[in-house]
Each structure stands twice: as C-alpha cells, then as structure tokens.
Length: 134
Length: 347
Image (cartoon, rainbow over all chains, first blue to last red; front, top):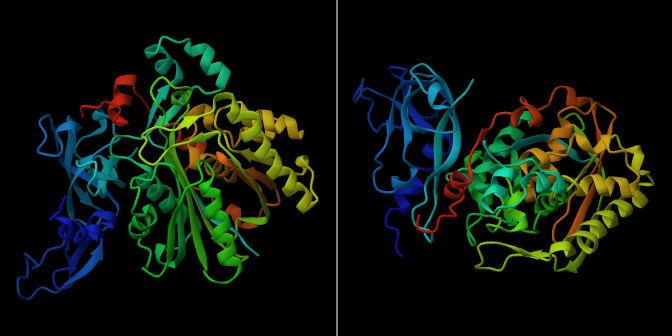
C-alpha cells in the first residue's frame, strides 16, 4: 500500500517530536508551528529555527464528540490551544487529565504519544500531546 | 570504571485491578490476587506503545544524568512489544530525545530481559572507549491473551538507564555482571501471533528459578560476595511472589527486596520490569550501598549485576520517585481496558 504522505509526515518529525518552531530575530516573537514568513515583520523578518518550551497553559479548549477521519474511535477527547512558556501557541490534544482540571489557565506539559495509527500495516505517526499537571 | 549516570522510569496512568479482570471471567479475584501477589496492573492507553513509554523514560534518564540527547553514542531498546516487526524503535527514540545522527542503535528482544542485555552492551562500548554514553531501555506494553493467566499481570511500563565511564558522573558503579543462558522453551510468541504462549508451571522451576539462581550464584562467585552483602536486591518480577521466593532461596531477607518490587502495584512490565525496580531502589539508596539486580528473560536467560551506589547519587535522583509517580493513577474497567489495548476486534 503506497503512503503518499510519507515525506510530508517525515518533514514534520522535529515539530512533532520536540516542538521545533521558529523565532523572529527582528520582532523577538516565537512561532509554532514554524512560519515561512514572519506575520509581523514580513520581508524584514529574520526567522531562525528554535525548539519551543515543553510546558505552558491552556488558553482555550473544547471537547470533541464527533471526530474527523482517523479520530472516530478516540471520541470523546479534548483539544486545546496551549500557550507555551515563550508565548507561542500550539493546538494539541489533552490526554491523561481529569476532565474537571481541563480549564483555561491550567498548566500543561508535553507528552510523547501516537497521534495517528489508523492502518495496521502502515506507518505510525508519533508526536506531541499535552497533559494537565498539578 | 563504568556505571549508571542517569535513570528514568515511566509508568502509564491507567490501572485495572486483578479483581476486575477476574469478574469478567467469573473467577475468584481475591484468591487470584493473593496467589500471584498482584493487586493491579498499569495499562498503556490506545495512543501509547513500547516506543512512547521508552521516549518518556529516556527523557527522564537524560534529566537525572544532566546530559543532552546529542551526547548519546548508542541506543538499545529491549522489548517484546516493539510497534514494528521491521523498523527500529531505537531510531524513533533517538530522534525524539534529539540525539545527533552519530549514534549506533538497535532493537533487542529476549523476552523480559532485553533491557538488561542493552545495559551490558552499553557497558562494553563505554569500557572499550567506543562511546562516551550509552542509553539502554527496557519497555513493554505487554500482551496477555484474554482469559489467560498472563492477563492478570501483563502490564505496561519502561525503564531507561544511561551508562557512562566518568567517575564524577557515575551514580552507581557496575562492579560486575554475569549472564546465564540456556535454550528453554517456557514462553514464546511466533512472528505473526498476537499473544504469547507459555508452558504454565514450566515457567517456574526449570525457567525463572534455574536461570536467576544460575546468574546470581555465578555473580557471587565472580565477585566473592555473599547474598547479604547487598543492601537491596532487585529481581525480574513476573508476579509478586517469585522475587520473594528467589530471595528466600538465596537467603536474602525479604525487606531488601521490597523497595524494588513494583509488580504488585503495576503488574509485570516485562522488559521494563527489573529496570523499573532498580529505578525505585536508586530513588532512595545511599552512597556506599550495594545493589544486586538480576533480570530474567524467557527462552531463557538471566543477567545479574552487582552495583555500588556513589556519592553522586545525592545530586542526581529522579525528580519524582517511582513509588510517588505510580500513585498518580486512573482506574478503568475491563471494557475500557479492551478498548485501550485494542482487544475489540471490530475497531
């Protein structure tokens, strides 16, 4: 079975495995996932690769009861926008957390999980999810 | 000089009790729990596998060692539940811990003892000067066939050990190691089979006890030590009873085994088992104390180690001790367990 998205998946390993994003040396802002152009400085921006901190806090969250293709069996699950310690924001699943503790402002840390494993004979995609700490 | 410079243990959040499993199969849970000395076992979630547990344990090991992933010169991952039959877990762990591409790597399998085989390989590489640091991991999301005796104990967890050769970094010096191996068919899983099979009672006397005793006695002869020279003893723990029995056979007081005996609370983490136990001992061991460790892998073999804890342990313990970490848990019932471990076949 061909897996046409393999190169795309593989290129995203640094982003998924250890939160590699980028940073604009002009406006001093961090971005995750990495941007190709700094949205603040445009052509004056100077983007460099940078690993993001592995903890942050929830700034918004939702609970999904109907999952998109590939996530149907995972429902219900939580999705959140996580503001990392350097201000960059990541969209992530929240796992291993008591539903009562998933709220705006909750501290979270990154965990390494499978993010997609839909074809038993295909490649497994690993990456980040977050869990509430404390 | 060679020894452990960092260690990390990871146990997933979810637990299922022996009584809950017994309820489904209309068995006497209390009686079984008492007979095997196991109350509950750790269960990896649907999105966890031997690889994700290995990554989490390795990150903790790097943290206690105080080194970055790019310093690692070898990664060996021992498991009998590697996510791929062909494609290494070790390279995924390497990328996840940001190791440089300049490291050697391989996946190992020797039932429950491939993790300690990795430790020995790292020892050899460090001692010979081929690498500066080596990472050995024992990890499993163990498979137990529904309604099989193994289902009560087959747990999930991982232990990672970083081996180095610098005196100022070593927290536990490895004084000696000794292995004992024979062809004994007590437990196996064929290439395409989903669950392992075992020889029932045959997994005891001619398998576990013969090999662990063989390795420990060989180690004692080699080091000219007595069993009670050790302050702690960690044995492979397929259930809560075998480690206590082997300690009794060797004349080791039971209290020396308890700190490293995790199976009653998290089940048998297979390749992780003895390394997880060692991690728990390193959480509290004092400088100068001696640790005896003996793994066991069906098929069959045992690797025994004599370790001496150094002064450096005071500065380099895990942030959260193993016994503390496993208190964070969430109980699930058999249905959720079947979902998470993908035992529901229409999924």
